[in-house]
Amino acid sequence: MAVSLQTANKPVIHQEKPTNKRRRVVVTGIGLVTALGEDPDVFYNNVLQGISGITEIEKFDTSQLPSKIGAELKSFSPEGFVSSKLAMRADNFMLYLITAGKKALADGGISDEVNGQLDKTRCGIIVGSAMGGLRIFYEWFENMLILSRRPNPFSVPMAGNNMGCAALAIELGWMGPNYIINAGCATSNHCILSAAGHIIDGITDMMLCGGSDAGVHPIGLAGFASCKALSKRDCDPTKASCPWDTNRDGIVLGDGAGVLLLEELEHAKRRGARIYAEFLGGSSSADAYHLTRPHPDGIVRCIEKALAKAGVAREDVNYINAHAPSTQVGDLIEFAALVRCFGNNMELKINSTKSMTGHLAGATGAVDAIATIKDMNLLVGSKKERLNIKVALSNSFTLGGQNSSILFAPLQSE
View 1 (spheres, rainbow, N blue to C red):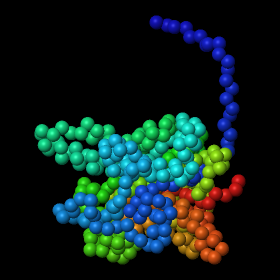
View 2 (cartoon, rainbow, N blue to C red; view 1 turned 60 degrees about the vertical axis):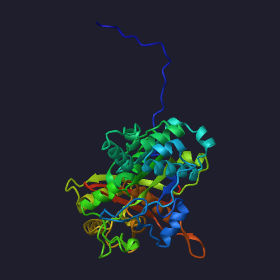
View 3 (cartoon, rainbow, N blue to C red; view 1 turned 90 degrees about the vertical axis):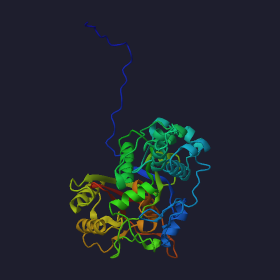
């Protein structure tokens, strides 16, 4: 049946053409949960002192496991950040995510009153997880082996990688983009890239982004040990994760979360927000090469694309927080890629926080980014001047050859 369509007599709305001026993205809040501290200042002071958060695991029996060390959270409590009902039902990675997210909001000056004044349709959350709800899945499987015991009805929803973002959005009322990216160890960087993209494209004004994981679990330890990725230096936990050291023999798993509050620059200025750093740009790439072994060409390609996207000359990058997981192959391949990208830049400083935090899987990129941002704001010397960091690169790669590089710098005037 053919139907004639008639236009309604409605006034024509003339939309303004978007300007070509690129919207700038800044970091206005940081929050984390790690074995080195659950406050950014405590965490960073421990990093500066070279304190390791890696110890013997205490929260479960490791006698039958191939590894007995990890950067576990000894005294974490979600009290004050997560309701008691949700705390009983949720997996640990969700609790870490929500806690770090709320800490980032508080650090950024987003109180309940300020949150009530935001346009919540323009506020989003992209905080990923590489491993999701290991504890919930493990408990569900144990219950399934006992025929008389019915599985917890919250097992499936509370184990999903997306549920942390969902729960936080429900509580905040944020109705902008809300999803997760799982790119293994490069999860956080991909989430930060996507969140910044939404702001640049004019879709949102404010985004929480980063990663959270709870890999210090029998499943996590056994899984990584079976593919011979874990360090065997149980006798010396604090030195087991040692990027670039000739005696390095594998990663050490850690628990935690890192969340950044990204904001459009003018939006941040209007509310008088403190600005830690500016997000300049970034990129991602795939090696398309091997399931476990990275390829230097893929890492080089990713970094070069990030520099081009951000409009940054390689000579201006003088600080790198490398992925450097403390593996024999990965450390060397990444370092070779950095040499190819940046040559013999005598001003370039390279660091890896995994020697102290362990490998936080999906959270590692965000925690690395927070350490990098704290470096930019460190006051040194008698005159209390900032370190001369022009542009900082935070780099991540993962199993399967997925790479991601992001660039930060101190805020410059227009």
